[in-house]
Length: 265
Ligand SMILES: Cc1cc2nc3c(=O)[nH]c(=O)nc-3n(C[C@H](O)[C@H](O)[C@H](O)COP(=O)(O)O)c2cc1C
Image (cartoon, protein in one colour):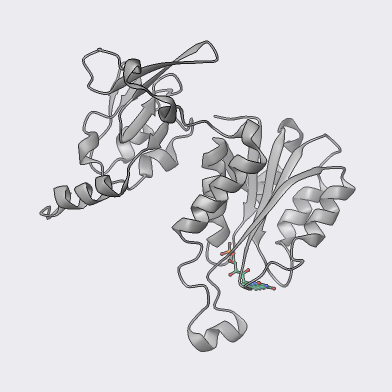
């Protein structure tokens, strides 16, 4: 768990912004909390904080303003995000940005996407921005953080694996890497689990609908990763962000073929 960062959000309408908060927290490997919880949390302990919500009548949710008003003058990196109905962001971020600047905060970056909206004139056409934020927006949100706060993002060590990193330990896909002189053990090519980070909480073991993951000596191991449907429940629910799914379009098609004849779980 990355305890240097936190994401604070409100998402009262369609949970559009919650999707952004979730991917941002995953990218940073940190927690994401609602504004009410943030009011009870000492935010000065975090080096980087994200504030986001839907845009309601031209600005962020009042609860986000409440949280920002309670911030002290600690030097922190701040990012602002939102989802909105309008095609362009315009000056919707300005009010919260002004308050943050008054608090002496540095704004590391801002991010906004369109979100499903059925208010006002949109109702005539059965809603606007249908399906948004979509997968592309989610990827953009992660990329935004990797660009503006790279120092706080969780690295995906799997990208650094070379054939020589393979370890013979009885499990087919175990890799050993040396990162900043620390040994990192990864298991799995599709469902990759960082053994060095896994705390053995068992959440992924219990949540996987296909029982892909098992617990061995208090570590999660992806024994049946070829059964993985790429639902990402393990990845999303791992508090330590020890799990990363890796797949290309061919893997995705293979999943469909493999499970094509299934009639039940
Ligand atoms: C009460 C209300 C007011 C809204 N006002 C605006 C607005 O001023 N500008 C805009 O672009 N979108 C506006 N929207 C649309 C939302 O910003 C958009 O649907 C957003 O994705 C909602 O985020 P959420 O699902 O996280 O709450 C409004 C929506 C609601 C419910």
